[in-house]
Each structure stands twice: as C-alpha cells, then as structure tokens.
Image (spheres, rainbow, N blue to C red):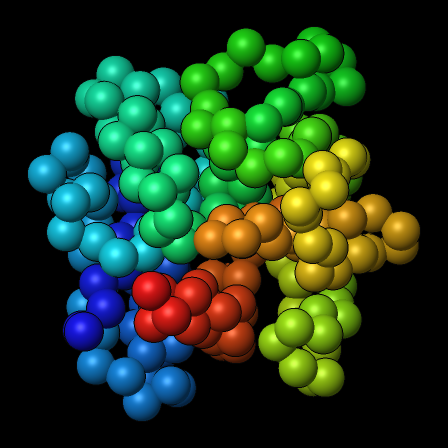
Length: 203
Ligand code: GLN
C-alpha cells in the first residue's frame, strides 16, 4: 500500500507539516503521498492525518461548519492514525480549559482521554525551545518548539506518556492517536512524523 497522509489544511502550520511529512517519507525510504485535507471528500482518501498547530478555535469552527470534524472523528474512532500538534492536540483532547476562562466551549474531536490546558506556558512572547527526551523515537534529543503551547494536565489509563518537560506532560499516545504540545514540523528532525507513518504502515 502506498500510504496517503493528509494534513488538515484549514488554518495554521500547514506548509511546514507538508514539508516535514515529505522529509519523513524520504528518511524512511518510502514512496508516500501527501495531500491537503480541506473538504469532506479528501477524508476518504487518507490513511493517516496530521492536525497542525495554529488556533484551535478557528480550526475547530471551520471544520465543524463543513462537517469535516465529524468525518475525521469517525475515521479516527475506526482506527486511522492521527498526529495532533499544539492546537491539533487541543482538538483531539476530550476536555480543554484555559486558566482565565475555565472550560472552553470550542468545537473539538474529543477522542483522546486527556485534559489539556491551553496557553499553559504563557503568551506568544514566552515561546521557547527545549531539548526533549522522547525514548520512543530514540536516544537523540528532540528539539521541542513551544509556541503558546498547551500542557497535558490529566491522562486516562490508556494514555502513554511519551515526553515530559520539567514534570509537565508534553507528548502522549493513545492507540492510534499521538499528540504533542510542541511543533515537530518546525525542526529538521522527522522522527515524530515517522512515528505516525509507522502506525499507518501497520494497518
Ligand atoms: N494557543 C493555541 C490554541 O489554543 C495553540 C498554539 C499553537 O498551535 N501554536 O489554539
């Protein structure tokens, strides 16, 4: 099977994920296809999905108006692998809150058994990079880029912690769902994208 990875292309770091997925295929020596997911008919073509960072309220609203959110939710619940980064993680979480407003009433997919806090590391000007230990992708540190990043505050029994930073959970996996607080598409290291592609190839 020639894997087809889709990048949800409504708002956010779309180009960067397209480029990083291309690099991941190259690094793995796999001939894969990458498409932008913008409309319902695109969802039927993909074997795996990336939900990018950006603004989770904007992405969620746009996706729910076009029925994309429901379709994507259906595919993920049937086992399609998905990687959500930053805002993408927020959209996958079952519960989302914000320190100022409390529980946010934004449209989400809500399939991952985690509670996330939006903007937990501060505002845009508090963006930072950190060398992360993520054993599942190997011993070499991974450069984590955090931009108005969410923190994972609670996890359910089926959720595996992939990475912590200073005691805060910043990457998780639950069966076919991977979520990161940081932006793996803003590095030149394709290992997180490879993790998604590996799941697709196991299907
Ligand atoms: N703070 C943003 C949100 O809540 C996420 C930031 C990002 O994706 N870089 O949607």
